[in-house]
Amino acid sequence: MVPAPSREPIPKQVPPARGTRLRHRLAELRGPAVPPQPLDARALAALAANPGCKRRAILDGAGVNKAALASALGSPSAFGQSQFAFMRGNAFEARVKADGGAELLRLVHEKLDAGAEPPVAGLVPDLAAVGPEGRAARTALALREATEAGAWTLLDHPMLALDVAGSPAFLEPDAVVVHPDGSWTVVEIKSFPMLDGSADAAKVGAAARQAAVYVLALERVADRLTPAPEVRHSVLLVCPKDFSNLPAASAVDVRKQRSVTRRQLDRLTRIEDIAATLPEGTCFAPDLPTPDLTAAVESVPATYAPECLSACELAFHCRARSRAEGAVTSLGRSLRAELGGLTSVDDVLDAARGTAGDPADPAVAALRRAAQLRAEALGSRSPAPEGASCP
Image (cartoon, rainbow, N blue to C red; front, side, top):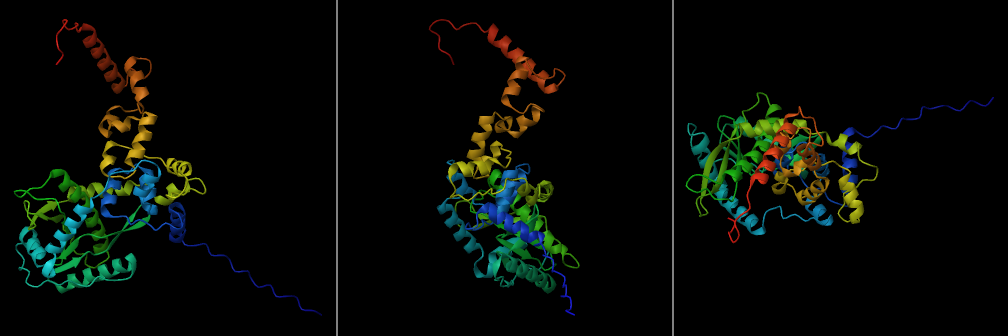
């Protein structure tokens, strides 16, 4: 009698982990041969300022080079830092951190922690490691060791990790200082001047929003320690004094920017949810034919506002599309909020003429009243005398 063949169970195929699937999907969107563009704090701050823009969220999450993408679409952007400013900033940062960061630690002590012992010889741990994940782990270890040591410690260009819409972002602040009491301070070094103790308000605001992202990332590291160290909400902004190359510093409270950034990042639609809505085969590789690339970009909804011109490389492309569609957001967020349910310029004009819109809507009523006042003003204006010049 021939024995029946043994029926061994067929091993089940284990599906790839969720994180692995997402990385593969983002690599397909970016283009298999295209290296990822790192997501820095400046981009995160801009993304948090416009959380409703799914286009920027998926492009940043996939590591797409938006400058190259804008050029391929025929709408190159002038957004970015000049090479001269970049070199000047690097030279100034090297001067501030010279001699083991002695001058930088002195400024932190003077502006933020005058009651502590003055820094004599601060510690500067080596943060070198392989890859961003390795550097982030090495930074977390150095922060824990510095907190336990209870001495002034300077972490030069540490690596921090922050989850953004379900995808990890690796951030590299200029410096983080650990105080003798174990608290942590973010240091931002900028090349714009500080004249008579104050700097340009717009640039300081941008630096504060960027530093707030670093504070959020530091808090994630602190939460994993027991007891959790204090992450100070006053960061140190270091700039050239007047028109020299000497450093000047100021304490900047970023509690408001931190709260806004955290709330806006929490509102971001998860990247995997956005990716799931895209057509099969969507790819943002800059070497694709322009029609295919345009179709891929337009498959992701965008929320354009004039503020994007100073924060996003795709702003010119999105502005052209927004104007072509007659969207009122191209005129500014404040105006968009005032108009309520009127989302297009045609809707606004029809409401003002009285051919559309609910008269009970306050926005419609205000538009009709404004149109009436304009008609009365134009109708009552007498023609200028012959030969008179208009002002």
